[in-house]
Figure 1 (cartoon, helix red, strand yellow):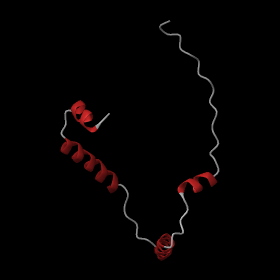
Figure 2 (cartoon, helix red, strand yellow):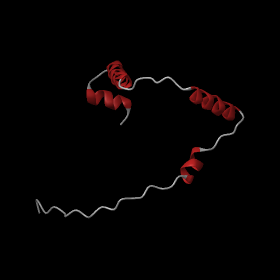
Figure 3 (cartoon, helix red, strand yellow):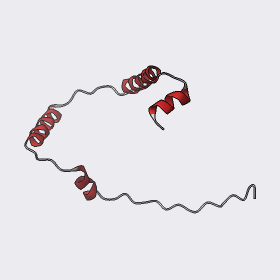
Figure 4 (tube, helix red, strand yellow):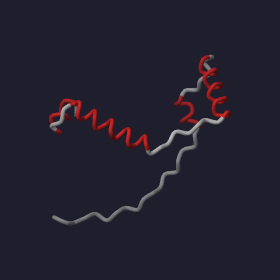
Length: 85
């Protein structure tokens, strides 16, 4: 669904939708207080920025490939409903 279709479906203007989204965002942000970074955090950030500037990066795809896969939980088959047959 495109933005304009959503606007018509909800009968709200774009600015009303933006206002609502901002209210939701700020309400969520208020729940998580900002933490002061430690000296070790700041050192790690600076080192990471230097590595990035030198081009020493690892593609996300490579990291994801190297992570162990999560075990998949098997589910039992649910009985099929015969209601309405």
